[in-house]
Image 1 (cartoon, rainbow, N blue to C red):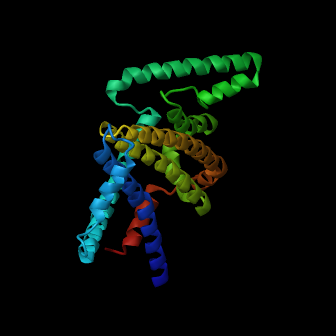
Image 2 (cartoon, one colour):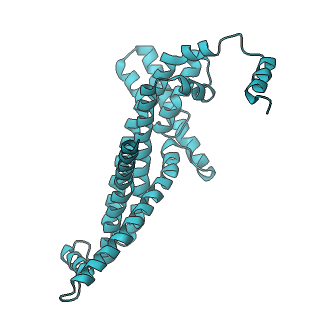
Length: 285
């Protein structure tokens, strides 16, 4: 048990360092460059190196002062980096809502227009495919959404598609059925779903880092490029993870819904039986 707990602690520490501290340290380095270089000296790497040396060097012959300064820098940088990582994770929620089209009320009109345009394009491609049967029309339709669009973004429709398709196939409400079905899934299936959802969340967190980098562009314009690259990578990774996650959810229902139906088959325990069982388990307490 001690070895297990030690290994668990080591893995948690590695995950904490990888997901929070390292990205935060990178952000601090970029922020330092932004403050030191500014727009006019944006590529003066020699000045940046001199600033770093002046920050870390000690007094002549003062090795103790240098060591103390280094320790203080580490003690300050690590928790600050972790805090920035937590902030990026907190921003993952707004990023997810932005990418999935769950936009706030002030943007409701824009969301409605985008959704209508996507729905019209989808319907046009679907009609062309059903009329002519050309594979390219089906590919064009499926590239827009696997279902008639009801969100302003592809990602929103892709994540919503399992609920729509499973309702059409089995007549179930996925939000109601899923918690019960989840308890019956094999552990390997649950692990795969959890891992895929974690990849999706990681992509949204990367979008949160893009949001954090953007204000630095006011001081140092290359930070805007970093923000744009991070945003593009986050969107690409989110699309890939969403595609896999949605397919896995549908597959899990296809393969295991019969187990849930068997477990909930009639006759169900009556209220009288339930009350009697409760009294028995209470043992008179």
